[in-house]
Image (cartoon, rainbow, N blue to C red):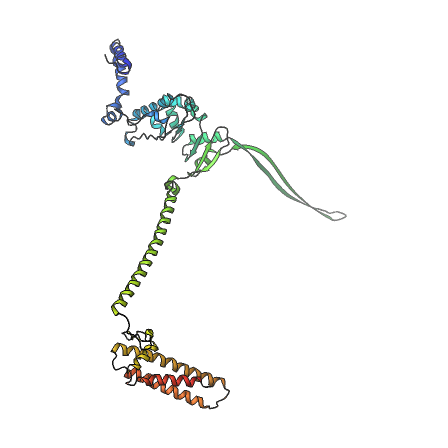
Length: 441
């Protein structure tokens, strides 16, 4: 004999041997009908072992999802009832307590059919910290789950939320649950009338009489009447986004539903904004450090390049007067700057004959710049003097300025067309003479 379940299976098997043929056949048929769902290979594999301990519902945080494909929901509803009943009993075995609540959410609860464990859970298991949520399409489905009292026990012990109501039975229940309100009905009317009488009499004397009668009347009265807070047809026409909540001991509540897939905050992971802020701050600090490092590297590279260039050129030749800054050679290139000290050194060394083409071009640019600047100064001085004196009075300095302008224009044109002259002193002499002329009053 088997000792499984404390010998219970062996005892029940022995009892079957005492049944009569018809009674045994009926018993076996009933058992086979209720256990038929276990014959499916997938179900047999599922119930063979468990990957979690239901007792953890009372000791830790755990979420259990009981999911059946929609096409198998009706055929395998017995399996779903077995799961839910087993979990309810596992919580009840933990004893009376309020510290750790266990929440059962039963979507499409009508697919479970009648389950005695739910009958007990509605009115007896609340002390065991069991909380239940039933989601039904109508009151008709509620009567399917609770056929004994048509779901009255559930309706009287729970908070009810109605939205998207489409059947008249549910609408009538909501209307009766909301109760009545008192309204004031005003009724009345007005009347208006006119009468005209006209008469004549003849005889010894002739007389005529006319009488006009007018009457107006207005009546008004009001009375209090009772009507439903919401009529069934008004409930059926409510927006599907509106919900009516009926809680025992509280007034009805009309609220607006929030659709979870339209709420962006529900799809934001906890702490995501903090992580984004930390990442942005880290990126900003790293960018600053990178900018500083690149700037320092560029500065070091530029300094090293200058040092290498000076090392390749070697030290400058000593100057006769001991001032090396006045003895530097003109750099190569037509746009390289050349100081006046360098020009004076070139003139002292014998003119421009020994210079390269690049050095000559650099000297030419210096002289052109000085000559153009002097010409502009002379022209401004002449214009200012003429504008200051009322009328035209010729003065000797005007001739000097005009002569200086002619000489400067000639020197500029010669430099631009022919380049440097063989005599290196003529440009400097012209510059000195023009400066002296500008200093005269």
